[in-house]
Length: 248
Length: 308
Image 1 (cartoon, one colour):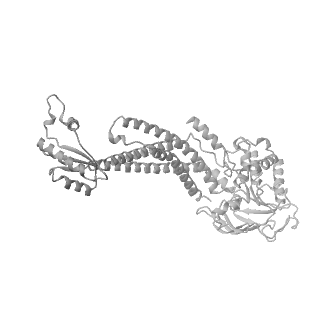
Image 2 (cartoon, rainbow over the protein chains, first blue to last red):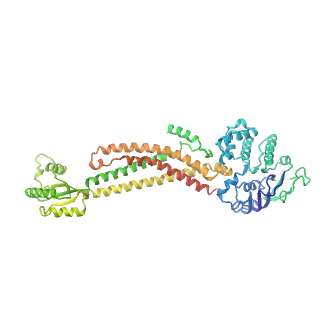
Image 3 (cartoon, rainbow over the protein chains, first blue to last red):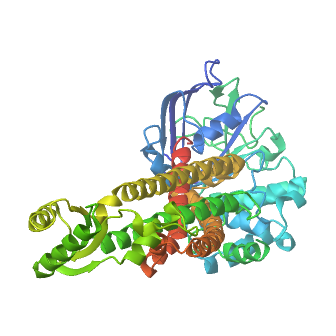
């Protein structure tokens, strides 16, 4: 895993609160680099999903600075958000498939939104659905798919446009171990092509499957640094002499 | 609207290039096409009424523009007859008079018959009914021309009254003008009601599809892409409603025209719609579609701006 200098994401003293409640994320500072594979872990309610929402621009922080692809994301004008969002693939924890569209149309949605012509959509979407094992369910609506199938459609939708950064919130929570491993290999393939991958999970076995990954741990809204991922340059697990991730 | 519905559903199915099917299209079974149909039909009837009234006023005005009536109100029949002859002779020589004619006694009798009756023994001619002279001027009967005519007639018929015919109908023209304003006001109110209905429907549709809109936003969809979907859906609803409304309005106009034509009144006979009027009426559904689409677009864009 190479280590380019230019950061893709930079958080500096970021805090997030809803209304007048106490901060659910506090003093979050870290840097993500292009081409790296990150796991974000922590107990339920630690703030993983909230942190990912800040990453994929679904939420503005209450305080702090966020730079995304070298641009200040806090002061980013609203009309420029779509351009940034198209560079980020998102696998939502609850899949968030569009109920009135077929599996094919759901996967094709990022390409259509980006203005890709229909003739350039059919083949890659078909191949992607084949790859996630849903080649024969292309015309099925989400309501007729199982949880695992919906999750695979969500993942296919997130990666179809070859994003610069892939953000996945518990992407293997509803699939069997074999499919989980297969999806992880897909993420690794994308990562090898230069996509920065951020996967939120509390599945230790999944993290161990990617030994070259960097781990960020959230604990009650604060970030800890078990692998040195937050340092510059990040300490790679192999360099730290940790073939396997440290205990979480 | 079953056939229309299936036809429009087929058209809706073909998404325009660069306009992905992001949201489910609203169905024609919803109330919007019907609401627009009612609005358009009422607008068509109001506009047709306004245009017909304008035509009636114009026709009457053109007929009466140069019309002047001279009344010889002397009580003695022989003197009345003498003054009438003298006035006719003077007017025939006047350069500004295009046509002059004495209204025949039979015509006068017919005019007063509804008030004085026709029972056997009635002697209408025994009454001192003024002699009437119908005059057509070469131009409009302005105050200056009327004064010149009075001056010309006064030496031969000192008690003669000279009146512009348009003056008698001034209250009718004023009433027609008021009715035209009323029709205009009604059209404006219907336009406001259409805007309000489209605004509510757009907000309702936004609320129903909020989750999908958020997903499309997260995938990099722009406000304009989302607004286009709503615009397109509204355009289909408004087009279907507009067409139905135009047909309904046209049938109503046709029925009203037949009833008014049966009255046989001279003024009502002028209240007809001409080709340019029908073009204006045919443009009403198009204006309705444009108004609905613009309202939907502005409503959706304003609502989307409040989302991240």
